[in-house]
Image (cartoon, rainbow, N blue to C red; front, side, top):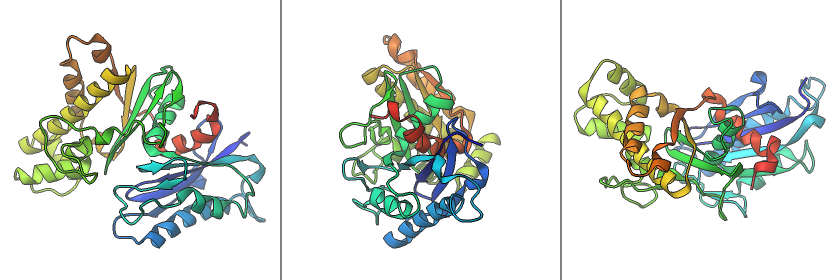
Length: 320
């Protein structure tokens, strides 16, 4: 049996997932509960998906069939797509437009506290959570100046500098998806032009490939086309990879990073994505402190977001 547990909650543009995570960063497989989110849902439907995921976990902690001792639970960690309002516990995920300044921390607390009275509920942006996870048990172990990135439906990120998280006053520091990439004018949902998310996310890369004449419709199909040598698909991944690399170079120039760990569904589209990202960073030939940065795939598979949310509880000493 674990010595302590955290309830981890990950909320993104396509799903919400909750699980129990132990003090070693292991997700307890039988505890995972997933429900859909998405642009087509109302604000209340999104809220009910969150409640349902949490209730699935709580059912394992109470009643005659409880699988785990509720007394082991140290807190609830929430990783949510941004932007967030850290002080107020509210979220405004770009890919969930019906939630604007939504009181997510209150929703989770109201769901959890009837079963686990008074337990702490900690909210941070999902990019910061994934960075904590990589620093704890993932590809960035042993490094204290880390950026984690998610390249998926959107592009997010977070920072650990000097061994501690850097959320910024609003909780949105490290949101690299909305750094603008020179030479691009793709419109972004945030209102900017040429943001990394607008250029290199999975859906936007597929859109660009479609505009060039490619006929597929998903990131998975694009990955297969790259593997088959389709020239448009190959160029699409090059375009996305170079944009990722240019954003990383800018971030490394600003905050002097040791390693960038990249996860998320679209990060698996092809190894070429990483090759082009590294090549773009290598162009900063006069800045050795920039070109030294390591760009590595996530070491956490699909568990990273949940582990990161749990790290808000298990690694609370690092959480600013």
